[in-house]
Structures are given as structure tokens and as C-alpha cells.
Length: 345
Image (tube, rainbow, N blue to C red; front, side):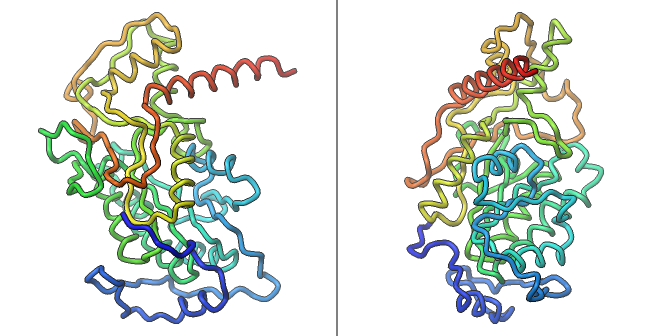
């Protein structure tokens, strides 16, 4: 992890023109490799009547739970787009969006996260999680925007004997197609622009998004608990579940401190999905049985890491509270929101 004295990213016309004039043969300082530029088929130049004022934040993927959390937090400081408004796999549309609005920071909340489907359908996973990320990173570099890209604990898992949280310097080793696609996205970001922050996180839960994946683990457990006296949860997969609101706070702190590179941002601690489910049931005051099962009993198409808890080794990384405290807060907010909804006419 490094800190940069300059504010991310400069917005002057001179700086942006200089960035646009850099050739594909320039080398990133200290990387040891040339930038492998593969730009969209054209670099759109907005007409004079299309020019807009520069926005501070551009949120790509506003319909998911992470995107929605950023939209609510940043409010008028951000421009947010959905897939319908700008498909991240359309490199030309993405480049045009960035050149029109000239954001200072791009928050890439878009992802294809159907882990089991990716085993049989690797093409959409790589299209969204890797190739689209490459095009986005190139466009960010051209306009001088700072790119915040979100990755996953699933880039780890190959070491089945691991029982210590993974640090940023640990060697990745994914065990499924989804994890490989996300790791490829990380590499594309690093090789495409020096102005980036790659955030690895894990097991996100928050207000369910309106996009393709409309729930999270906490909501699934609560839903199952209303219909079944007994639920089964895997006990041999350990991770660091993270409350979306805490992640948003930590990311904005990283940007404020001008952090760049790779950082792990999760709620503190390691817990199995079984233990996490028991904590959800206990905190929600429900009277059902949570039965532990093995991953083999679940028969999922994609293999999961047995241990993928994360921790940050960098002293400037924002401190995040424990997963238990975060879960209590989320369930309290959820309960209050439900009570308020019932009171509305």
C-alpha cells in the first residue's frame, strides 16, 4: 500500500490533455511492465452542446446493494448509472460516459457474482468481471479519473490448510471460475492505470439491491427461518462477513487519505457461515434450529474456499468494527425500517 501526496485525480484541462496524449508504449513507474492498452474502438469526443460539468463521483452499478449504499451516502455529489443506462460491457458507451462527465473518482460497483452459474457460463463472468474492467480502467486513465474497483475474498482458497486471515501480500489462488474472473479484473486494473484502489471485501450484506442478485446471506437466513423450523448451513467455510454501510465509510476514508493500490476492507474477525447464521437467528430472537452441514453435503456446482477471512496489513487502513457489532447494527436498522413502514398510511 502506498500513499500519494497529490489529490486524486487532478481535474485541470492541461492534466487531462496530457493524459490523453500518452502513448500505449509508456511504462508505469516501478511496475516493470508496459501498459497493455486496448482502448475502445473509438474515443468519443463530446459535442459542445453535450458538454457537462465535471462530477466528483461516478457510480457504475447503482442497482446493487453496494451501489445503492454509495448513492445514498454521496447524494448530489455523485452521478450513478445502472446497467440499463450504461452497460459496463459496452466499452464505447463506458468511454463516452467518462468523457462526457469527467468524474474525479469512478466507483465500479458492477459485478457478475453468480458463483455456481459461472462454472458452466464463464463467458459472462469474464465479460463483466475482467474484460469490462479493463476497458473501464483504460477510460479512467485517459480522462485522469481515479478508479475504485471492488474484488472478493474468492481470489483465495487454494490453500486448504490455511487458518489465518489473508493479507494483501499473500499470493492469490482461486478455486472457482468466479474467483479467477475477479482476479483477472484486479490484474487488468493494475496494468491499465496507476490511479486505482482495489478493494477486496467479503460476504456483503445491506439493503437488498434491485439488480440481478436481490438478496444477501442475512436476508436469506431470515427468509428461511420464517418458513422452516430447521435450516442447514455450511460449517466448513470461514470468512469475514461485511456490512455494506461500514464498507462505504471505509472506502471514503481511504479516498480522503489518498490511498492507492490494494487494500482488504472487511468487518473484523473470522466466522463460519454456520456460526454467522446462528448469530443472525439469536439476534433476531427467532426460535429455530440451525444445523451444521459440510460443503460436500450442499453439492454446489462451484467449489468454495474453506477459509477466506481477510485482514489488512497496512497501518493506514481504516479500522472497521467486528462482524458481530456490525450485524447487530444492521438487524436493528432493518427492524426500525420495518416498523416505520408499518406506520406509514
